[in-house]
Length: 325
Image (tube, rainbow, N blue to C red; front, side, top):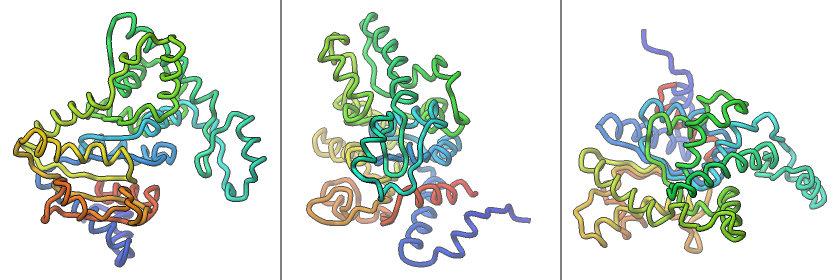
């Protein structure tokens, strides 16, 4: 008797055309890429952590379906915000009806809104800030430098927030990434709550030098080293959720290695983008995959997929198919 896969069976039966069919094709190609010995690199833009993508992404990481991640600073920290302050979040289903005064009311109560979900400043951001200060101070006193994600992982490894967990830690994609020791890259981290706090601390000299935090150029160097080592043995796919810097930063490593370092470098071996952005006005997020051929990122024969839909709906369904749920 074959194993029951209710979600996969439902999708294959009902998702037959248009974006629905593209979802199935992309998921099947994702599985094929892995079955042939390939690796997969995932990028996270938008507010995927606040959307609790960790419910499926963490399992993808644990089951070796994801081998590297690039994410925004917001997605890095918001996975931890959700971990320690989940019960204090406020949902606003009718957010479209909010007036400017309603928004001020949320602000005055310490809520920062992301579409229909409000993140509590005190229970999430300030709680993490107080713990993060200790990490920054300790590193600075020892003359050490770390990447943003390394400070986060240090806190998690030491269990400094464990007593505050409000969700099952198996639903945190950052904890899963830490436990599997997969590489993380966080370009443009300064554009995040913790990044703003760190910048402010540098201005006030509470942190003596911004060089305490390793940054984007060093991330690119590490990414180049990782891609070179892994691509020598396996084809690497690129699964892009949204667009922006989380996607554009890592995909550029291939033309950099090929054109600037003049190394014979394999192109990305699979490409899929979930986006609701349209192709217009020079948009990167809405650019069709073939445009990337002209930049030396993808090849003519690279399997390419675009699913023009809401990533909070599409990504969990694709992950469910890849996981055989």
